Length: 437
Ligand code: NAD
Image (cartoon, rainbow, N blue to C red; front, side):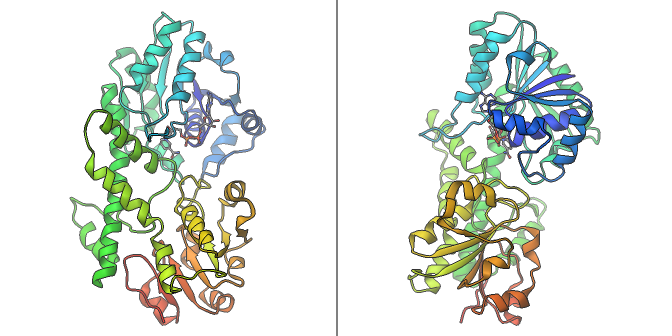
């Protein structure tokens, strides 16, 4: 099939590359000329494990190319995927200006039947809006389909190639047939394609992300109780996770959820609910819990230093909102940095992939190290904000040499409390007994 993907960010680039990998001819369109030039030169623009190999192979096979010229591609494709940003507007509702702006352009460019597939996360009713905007300028036949994306950054290629499910919202038989054909290679192992109406499909995406965010906030509140009651959240997690009705996954407490999806999608669903006069009480609490959890580690640090962080220097391991990505949107590490700088502390950070993005945003307000150990030089304590694998089994002897205080504040519970005690570390983590002298 011939496909256009409009918007070549985390979702668009993975979508375009994976559709090309299954034999389709894909053109990715973006308004960012520098990004398109880089991609056409064979340079990948995001860090995503496994993506570069597929990206290079499909460019070489001439199944994948990039352009800024939407007008030149519309006639030659059958399906047009929208993978555009839907950031929060001033009131928290999803801002549809990118999606509707492109719909407007498409209305002026369509000359024959196309399926317009929306992959962006959008409020219920957006498919109707897109349809109406296109129909202002184009009276021919076309379909608008909702096809929310569930990939996770860090494992996006795997998630796209082997999705748990594909959700497709459409009432059109013609669109349904094309979508089934396109997705057939991705569901060969029996994972379902769930066809439904557009509104249910649009809501499914928000419900999924909100539910996952709720799980995180719930476990973070249990962690708060553990700290007050002398229990261990790791034990409680195992205790409840072995109940099949609860499940083992997504039960880790830490320093809150971040990234480009959970915060904005929770906010947008609250807004959508408010707009229908429904007060989504649980989700409002999920948000409040997350906001306080993001700076919980800083509170522990302040408590340790009796409220005075002036002149203290901290090594910070991890900046990305989660491991295996360079994405720092809404990363808890940034909240921690801001809070510590406000208290007069200085920071030397290290992240395997996200430092260029942080440098771009924070400039020289913090220092950057070339290695995780380099960050420790002259530090009063080590803070851990992202659970990159390479942080999980560090050289503790080397840390002890570089960090005489042997003091670690771990926002991701990477190490065993008993082991740290045995090694003579002062170790503070989330929802587990702390050992401070
Ligand atoms: P992104 O910011 O990484 O990428 C968006 C791209 O769209 C950018 O390259 C931007 O230049 C481009 N763009 C903006 N306006 C354009 C226009 N008029 N024409 C062409 N290109 C244009 O965003 P993302 O993370 O890929 O997210 C896209 C959508 O997918 C959002 O709705 C998001 O909620 C949803 N989503 C994201 C993820 C994720 O993990 N990132 C997962 C599932 C769903």
